[in-house]
Amino acid sequence: MGLEQDRITIARLCGTARRLAAARTPIDQAVTELHAITRDPRLLGQASGSELGGWQADPIRTCWGQRISRLLDAAGADPAVRDEWAAWARGERLAPPAESRRG
Image 1 (cartoon, rainbow, N blue to C red):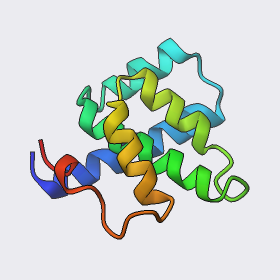
Image 2 (cartoon, rainbow, N blue to C red):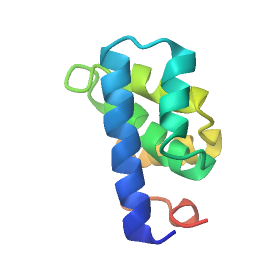
Image 3 (tube, one colour):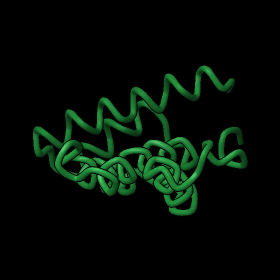
Image 4 (cartoon, helix red, strand yellow):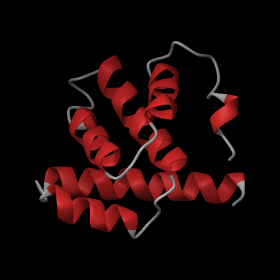
Protein backbone atom coordinates (compact mmCIF):
# COMPACT_ATOMS: atom_id res chain seq x y z
CA MET A 1 0.00 0.00 0.00
CA GLY A 2 1.32 3.47 -0.83
CA LEU A 3 1.47 6.50 1.41
CA GLU A 4 -1.51 8.14 -0.31
CA GLN A 5 -3.61 5.00 0.12
CA ASP A 6 -2.57 4.83 3.79
CA ARG A 7 -3.78 8.40 4.29
CA ILE A 8 -7.12 7.60 2.66
CA THR A 9 -7.52 4.51 4.83
CA ILE A 10 -6.69 6.48 8.01
CA ALA A 11 -9.22 9.16 7.05
CA ARG A 12 -11.84 6.46 6.49
CA LEU A 13 -11.02 4.85 9.85
CA CYS A 14 -11.28 8.17 11.70
CA GLY A 15 -14.53 9.17 10.00
CA THR A 16 -16.12 5.78 10.57
CA ALA A 17 -14.97 5.62 14.19
CA ARG A 18 -16.34 9.14 14.82
CA ARG A 19 -19.72 8.14 13.44
CA LEU A 20 -19.76 4.91 15.45
CA ALA A 21 -18.73 6.67 18.67
CA ALA A 22 -21.37 9.37 18.25
CA ALA A 23 -24.03 6.71 17.62
CA ARG A 24 -22.84 4.74 20.66
CA THR A 25 -22.61 1.64 18.48
CA PRO A 26 -21.93 -1.56 20.45
CA ILE A 27 -18.21 -2.35 20.46
CA ASP A 28 -18.45 -5.68 18.61
CA GLN A 29 -20.50 -4.10 15.83
CA ALA A 30 -18.10 -1.12 15.65
CA VAL A 31 -15.06 -3.42 15.41
CA THR A 32 -16.70 -5.38 12.60
CA GLU A 33 -17.32 -2.17 10.66
CA LEU A 34 -13.76 -0.93 11.23
CA HIS A 35 -12.36 -4.30 10.15
CA ALA A 36 -14.25 -3.89 6.87
CA ILE A 37 -11.88 -0.97 6.20
CA THR A 38 -8.64 -2.60 7.45
CA ARG A 39 -7.20 -4.90 10.08
CA ASP A 40 -3.72 -3.39 9.74
CA PRO A 41 -2.60 -2.62 13.33
CA ARG A 42 -0.22 0.08 12.08
CA LEU A 43 -2.97 2.05 10.32
CA LEU A 44 -5.40 1.49 13.19
CA GLY A 45 -2.66 2.75 15.54
CA GLN A 46 -2.03 5.88 13.48
CA ALA A 47 -5.75 6.68 13.41
CA SER A 48 -6.12 5.96 17.12
CA GLY A 49 -3.10 8.07 18.04
CA SER A 50 -4.23 11.00 15.94
CA GLU A 51 -7.62 11.00 17.64
CA LEU A 52 -6.22 10.40 21.13
CA GLY A 53 -3.54 13.07 20.82
CA GLY A 54 -6.04 15.59 19.47
CA TRP A 55 -8.28 14.92 22.46
CA GLN A 56 -5.38 15.16 24.90
CA ALA A 57 -4.29 18.48 23.39
CA ASP A 58 -7.78 20.01 23.37
CA PRO A 59 -10.43 17.88 25.10
CA ILE A 60 -13.20 20.42 24.61
CA ARG A 61 -12.74 20.87 20.87
CA THR A 62 -12.27 17.16 20.24
CA CYS A 63 -14.54 15.74 22.92
CA TRP A 64 -15.02 12.39 21.16
CA GLY A 65 -11.31 11.70 20.67
CA GLN A 66 -10.85 9.37 23.62
CA ARG A 67 -13.93 7.30 22.76
CA ILE A 68 -12.88 7.15 19.09
CA SER A 69 -9.40 6.03 20.08
CA ARG A 70 -10.82 3.28 22.27
CA LEU A 71 -12.88 1.93 19.37
CA LEU A 72 -9.81 1.87 17.13
CA ASP A 73 -7.82 0.20 19.91
CA ALA A 74 -10.52 -2.46 20.25
CA ALA A 75 -10.19 -3.09 16.49
CA GLY A 76 -6.52 -3.94 16.97
CA ALA A 77 -4.51 -0.71 16.94
CA ASP A 78 -0.81 -1.17 17.70
CA PRO A 79 -0.34 0.59 21.09
CA ALA A 80 3.24 1.66 20.33
CA VAL A 81 2.20 3.26 17.04
CA ARG A 82 -0.81 4.86 18.77
CA ASP A 83 1.39 6.41 21.45
CA GLU A 84 3.89 7.79 18.90
CA TRP A 85 1.14 9.36 16.83
CA ALA A 86 -0.63 10.72 19.91
CA ALA A 87 2.59 12.54 20.86
CA TRP A 88 2.73 14.00 17.36
CA ALA A 89 -0.93 15.07 17.50
CA ARG A 90 -0.33 16.75 20.87
CA GLY A 91 2.43 18.80 19.23
CA GLU A 92 5.30 17.08 21.02
CA ARG A 93 6.90 16.07 17.71
CA LEU A 94 7.55 18.23 14.67
CA ALA A 95 6.77 15.45 12.20
CA PRO A 96 4.84 12.19 12.26
CA PRO A 97 6.90 9.18 13.39
CA ALA A 98 8.86 8.01 10.35
CA GLU A 99 9.11 4.37 11.39
CA SER A 100 5.33 3.88 11.40
CA ARG A 101 4.55 5.70 8.18
CA ARG A 102 5.10 2.62 6.07
CA GLY A 103 5.08 -1.05 6.97
